Length: 131
Image (cartoon, rainbow, N blue to C red):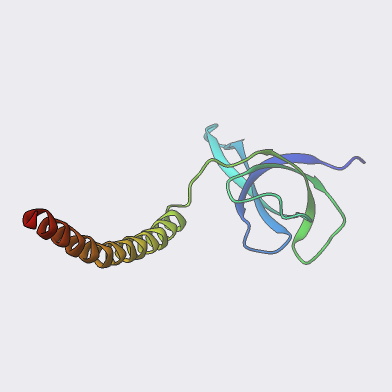
């Protein structure tokens, strides 16, 4: 019997070398004949940690690797384009603090050199006034 190959979406990549993959499907209700959305959750082994949350991946059946892992990652079909807003805000906040410190340091340097320039200008003006 050949091994099944299915595709799904990675919903968690918090574990090392393990991915939680959801496989969505439509099932017809036996009585009402309406299609219902169902999902199957599989835990897949990702040796290189190449997939991330939101990626569409292809997985294949394998021998049991742990209590829940019965699948192995074949390849990443499509990378996610979702943006982690919290991480962006944290990075922006860190960058903003670094920028403000750099600006303050530059202004402190300008003020120190500005005083010297002002005294030089005053001396130059005094010299020209005397002539």
